[in-house]
Length: 509
Length: 121
Image (cartoon, rainbow over all chains, first blue to last red; front, side, top):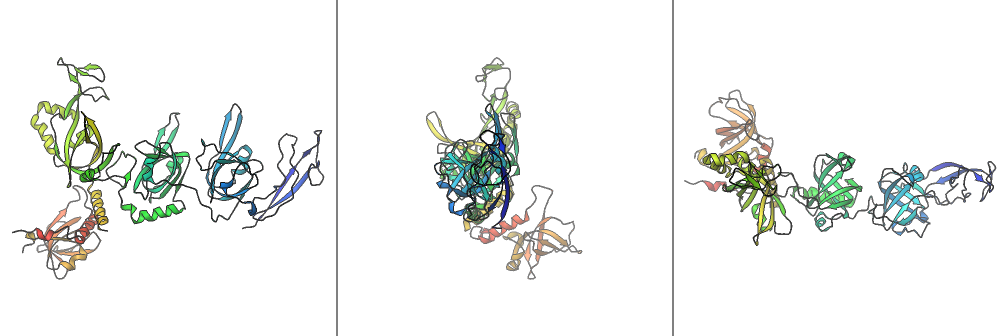
């Protein structure tokens, strides 16, 4: 109900100058040395000013007694000012704000004492500001405030913002104190749900590492939750989600803790993250911080715009991810290209490596110098030098061994309808293409040349999904684009067919 | 002209009426087999039915997805010349709905899929 009446009873004790204190009596006014019991009426949303009560004095315990009556009830519209106008030099104001992010209560204990605090972020049409409450104010206001709800706040203390703890766009931040009043406001007309300054995903490449930004996108897919142990031996949950926005680019956002566990990516929701940190891990990626706000299907215009765009056209786009993906082969976050695209789009010719996925057929594999003798040490792949005395020397490990292990470097030519490409496959990918492990292949080379040749013949005209890395490399003063196969997978014909049909339909529009 | 020597359009049930007296290839899932063994019903990727008639009764159990080659009668049934069972126990299971999508693409863009021109003496 817009008008409701609340009765609060407060009592306090006055002390006399000589330290004695008296109770009882009636009377109002300042410096009364009588004890009073007052009934206070607070009427919401009404511009009533109640008479000033006695100023508080120190009670016997030495603690400040609460003020009898607020001088201005929070419901006063006359004094409502925009957040953007708040500053330390003006104390008479009321703001009408929405709480957008409420932290949990944190306690501290150090040489100077101990205490507790919580903070919350607020927003109105003019801007945003961070608010912190300590100790007694925590007890008073923590239960009252709910994220998403609107309140009148009167008489908080303003000071210069500590940017280390807050990334909100405001030079100041607010601290609540004993004279602060916070009242719920049922009228949330005109107040935004949250203040965000979204950066298009395509622009993230130009943002610095560690920058704090806001982002919004459709969550096309999510990874499973995984658990990590931090440096301080704490276990934490982590989940990667993949967002795409109307720039048709995608980025991976890492969520942590409960947010990671709770996240439900089914139905491809719109996800907005306020205060995510830009990372250069795997190219460009984003990480949600403790201070970030992750909103699923937020009630803001950008979310509706994105939903509309995605349902109409975005869903059919392959989307190129700024974050290097480790698992590929299918799904909406793969960057599918044809081999002729690689040339026309000049992939790999920038300063960074480019990654793409394609379906291609092996035309030829070079069997000469495909197998080499490598250092037998576990993680060493260096070619060993035959000392011709039964020993093999590894320059990297600086040791000689009586044995070696066989390893593969395969140079192959792959092709599709449009173009062909020479690629290099190292151990794992070479073994998949040749359908043979390095060790037995190495032995076959020495013992049965026909069988060895047969392995290479059989690999010809096999079709796979290749995940390739292409980059400019300089060797002997010659700069060339080199392609390395990062991963090889069998073609999933169902997915491939669906993708082709979808591309055909799109091209026909 | 023998059904096997001419190009056969791949069709689904909705297209039967447009291919009367023409050789076709129909892929569908076995629904019902008539006790005489000379007639059975197939459902296509859209769930619609087609009737298939044989010259000789069946000598085996039919189930799963079938590819039938034959001519469409003026009753809209397929007079089968041959059939092929797409075995479910081998390879990747046949996706009939996806096949239907591909079939629609072929019919929507005949300029890119000129199968009729393929015959030569």
